[in-house]
Length: 183
Image (cartoon, rainbow, N blue to C red; front, top):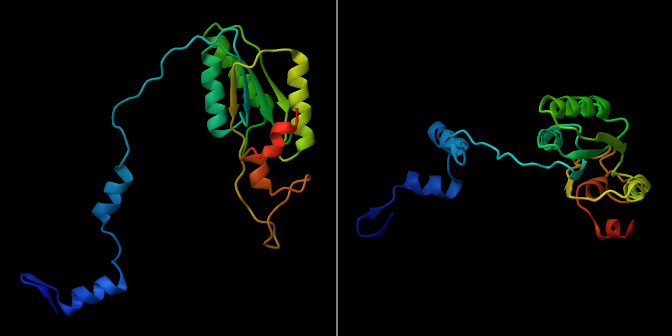
């Protein structure tokens, strides 16, 4: 099969092109895995957040906990918004608060670190959380909306809904317009 002078494709090459490419090589897979990595040690600047208030949802596990740990080391006052009964793979908020307090005191910071119940899958709980914050009269210096949930369907294959009738992933992760009108 000739397409132009000097550009001749065999029948095998044409068939491979039509059927799609074969599996990528091991070298290519490793190269893709390394793209975006940085072999240099990255450091975090020292910041003084003394007398600052941080409100962080989902701060008892994962990235939220790591962020809370760094805020504690920087001397911030922290309120974690967490579920009262987290899943077994998450740390209980009481334990998370103790670890954060230990980290702050190790660096000689005098901070307030506490957790309040906030179940993002219940607008009633979110409203109570917001009301409690407002009643305390504290300034809000940093808001970290970190709460999240993995999208899972119910056993019958249907989307899981919250008590408020919204699809659970959209209510917990993506702040919909109705959440702006809660407070």
